[in-house]
Length: 322
Length: 242
Image 1 (cartoon, rainbow over the protein chains, first blue to last red):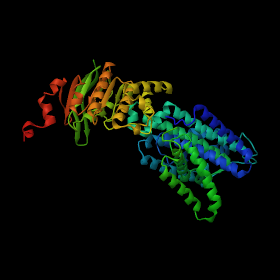
Image 2 (tube, one colour):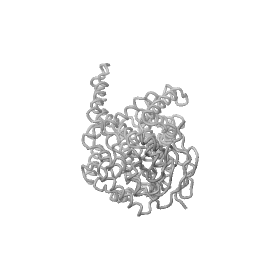
Image 3 (cartoon, one colour):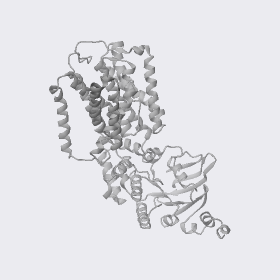
Image 4 (spheres, rainbow over the protein chains, first blue to last red):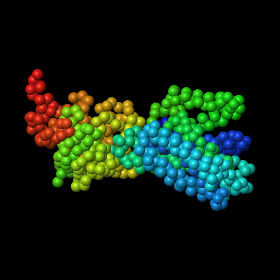
């Protein structure tokens, strides 16, 4: 059941206040750095939530979500360089392709359980990176430069202000959360969690485990792919190491697990803590070249997993899903 | 016409023939006790009926349609629900949510599923535990969660796998009267137990398995006097007298 600390009205008020604060934030913090930081939080929060649909709700730990991120980024970039289409079409196309790729990966891999599924997705992630590295039509190792334009919504490029990116990535995070909440409140969410808890028992209650796992990976892939498309538009240059990195696949898992895996807000909480931490440690101690920032980052993850394996949200709740 | 018809079912695991040419019929509204010593193949037969194992040979027909070969979820949708011998509740979900997963089979509305699940929980006496996490319950309560979850799918045939094993005598008598109330609703049941005392009072007919074969079938009163059944449970006479 929902751990309803607040009433329904209280939750709406809290969410409204959070959204209002997020909307007002760039007018208070006008410098590029804090705005860039927030954009990263929104983007990673959405990616971590997308992973959470598959890994958290459904219990299928994917270590290959960078595949979908990369597919979305490439689709968005390539429709512009090859056909001159708007990136918005590329993002939609990317979501479709990512969903198809997810089914192709999921169909055989969902025969594997537990660690074996994770290992398979990890390996397939590396295959995709290598594939794009050698695929000349999409730029190969050189990557893709998205042609620069003046500020435009049609081609979603803004050189003079970060605000459009800020609000679009905020909308992306809100969308990811709304989808997650919608899933948790529906039959699908109950089935996802039943599959996570005990797949055979779920099947005995009429749940088509394979069908629902494919739905989970499809939804996760589409949201992740949209994030990839937004990322491509934000940085305007992509190459395989930047959009297919294994580190990204692992990072989304860390964010969700640290915050509270399988919960609605866990991935966002993890992101709000870890992304600034990694940015600040990189800025203040990363320059020494000692890797101290990564050590601090790793230390925090170890600390949370030892003290509260349910993630930071576990400190506030007596366990379970909310 | 019988609701479930098992004919010539065999299940082989490598060199082990766990079920060997088993045939029997289950009529609508009947309660069949399925008994036998440890390793007799009772749970294997259940798993074959419920679709967890494909049968090696033979057919299983439910409500006039062949179900052997179908996956478990399809068999559940046809109206067969089961419990598991080793408790398999959804631990990190509440008791209510566990039962709602079953209730969602017949509705996609969360409100309807919740109402139905609460009604079923009332029947098995778990209303007071609805909001607790399944993992926090005792084994006997978890067994009732499994039962409620299966009932929530509105089955026509219920397969109960050792729901009474490990319960105290007091709990067993509660379970027996609970099972009797299901029968009043016209539910057909196959009850696996290896505790004979638990299964005899509720069964219309008893099927006895030993080493994978059906060795006897009949009314409970006949079964307890059957030579072969006594042998299977107590060993061959002259051996037993040593």
